[in-house]
Structure formats: structure tokens, C-alpha cells
Length: 391
Image 1 (cartoon, rainbow, N blue to C red):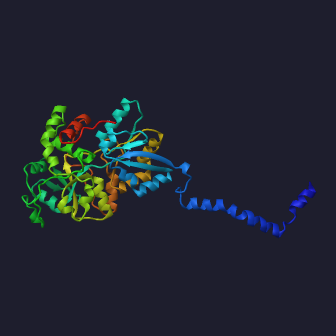
Image 2 (image 1 turned 90 degrees about the vertical axis):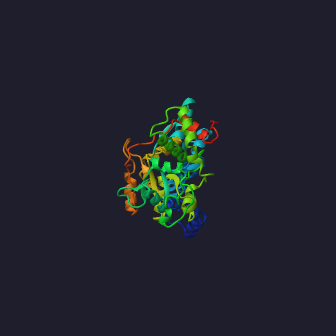
Image 3 (image 1 turned 180 degrees about the horizontal axis):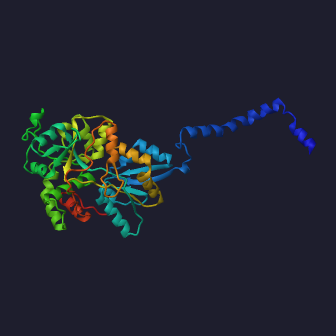
């Protein structure tokens, strides 16, 4: 063996070293370069088979998954969400075949999905990451005009951006056919001869609009829940003018409100709180303000998982610290303890950003009780929506 060892220990001639490096050196470097790229780009360049594509059908909460920050966090977990946008009502009544989860914006649509899947023996698991109350976004001149009439008042200790709105008194103004000029808005430096009302997204599609209808029905029924299908239909007939007087609704109602001409063409709109707060976080705006209806309502969006992939996503958005923090940065109130008022983290974040925080608990302990899913559907049909039929 010794002669062999001696041979191996002999110096390799230079020309052989050079030939080896020229032939194999460049190839030997490729894996090292690749590893460097992966290291600098975190997991963005992981092999495709390691990225879990999760398909979902969503309503307004699609905005959350379309946020670049949310997408980056999910990609670090090896997840990419593929979204199909639809209205909450359409999400609930149309086929969900081929999807891993659905994310309607409120309980009525979620209840429809759960009932249908339970009836068919199909899997459905619920995840509730955050909430955003129904609010009325407006401008300071309109809010101050209502305050002068005793219909709105500043929230205690919340700064000048937030008001509480007496819904019974507000609906009384709408039913009376009063116009803004009649209420004295000229005292606040502007003129508007339009009727007093709140504009909504498409009542037949958007959860926020259907929820607002349910809120009106609750107030008009003496702050009592609708008790039967006949009562639901009768109430719908009574409140229909309060909802249809606005004319043809716009699908992008918040964009209209946020536009320079919004003060004239969209003076009061029904939106989710997080939409307004996200606007304030993007640019401090002292002209636009928020009114919280009393009684109020918190729609509870639910991610409904249909399989293991949906479960993986649902578990992340309710527990991952980065995703929870990003939800706060987008204006949502996190859900922590059942029965506890949500919003502690949101209030702290707004104060940190030097933006006034709305009251996290409403002064009026009355809470709107929406009609049942079946009765709400009858009311929607009564005010002019086509009857929904599950496909």
C-alpha cells in the first residue's frame, strides 16, 4: 500500500490543475451562487413545489390578502393565496367547488355556507381573526350639522374625528324628507340641497349594505329583533324608501367618498371602520370624520376552511403575531377573548401613530340583533333584490 500512497502524495502538475478548474470550476460555483440568492431573498425563490397555493373565494376581506405586507408574511410561511373576488351574498349561494376556503364579510353569508355544507356532509371549520364595525363615514360639515340638531355628538375623549349617531333621530330626518340646506348646513360654509340619507354599496350584494338594512329594521321595530317572516316582509316594505332613495349604488363607494368631489356626491356612506382608519393611516385627514350608529353592530367575518390547506391558512391568520399586527395596521380590531370588547391593540397602534382613536366600547349598550338568514333574505327580495338560489 505504501507505493500507492506515495503516488497520491506526489504534487499534481500545474497544467492538470488548470485543466480541472477550467472544465469543472464554473459548475462547482453554481450551487453556491444559488444558495446566496435564496439566502438574500428569504423564501421568495423557494422551489415551486414548496409553496402551498391556497384558493379562496372572498368578498370585501379580499383587501386583506391583497395587501403586500400580508402576502410577504404568508410567503415566509410558504403560502400563496389565490383569490376570486365576489360579493358576500354571491360567495354564499354559488358553488365553492375547487376552493380551499371562503371568507364572507358577515354572519348571514357565513351561516348560509355552513348550513349548506353541513346538510351535504361536507367539511367546514370556522376561523374568526378580526372584526370591523359598520359605521357612517362623512365630512365635518355634515356631522356638525347633525350635532347642531342633537342627532350626533362627539365621542368622549376621542378627538374631533369621531361622533356617535342617534339612529332613531337620523332615520326620522330621512323619513321627513329634509334636505341639508333645511338643517342649516350653510352655517358651516357650504350648501347642499340633496335629501338627508346614507348611501350604501349594492344592497343586493354587499354585506355592509345588508347589515345596515338589518340595523334600520331593528330600530324601526322598536329596538327589537324581527320575530317572524311576516314581520320581516312588513318591515322591509316600511324601510324600503330609506334604502332606495339613494338611486343606483356604486360598487366603489369608498373611493367616491375619498375623492375630492366626495363632499358633494357621497356626503354620508355606509362602510367598515377599517376602511376609514386605513385612509387616516395613509394620510391624516381632518375633513373626513366617522359616525358610529347607536345602536351599532359588529359584523363578524369568518374564514371557513374546507380542507387541510384552508386550515393551515386559518390557523396562521388567527395566531401568527406578524399577521395579527398587520391586521391592526390595516385598521382591524383583533379578536382575543370571547365576550371581551375587541380593539385594544388597534387603539394603542393609532395612538402610537398620533391618530385619534375612536371609543373602543360604545356608550349605548343596546346591540342590533339581525334577522335570521331566512328572514333577511326575504327582506332583500322585498326591497328589490333577486331571490338567491344556491347553485
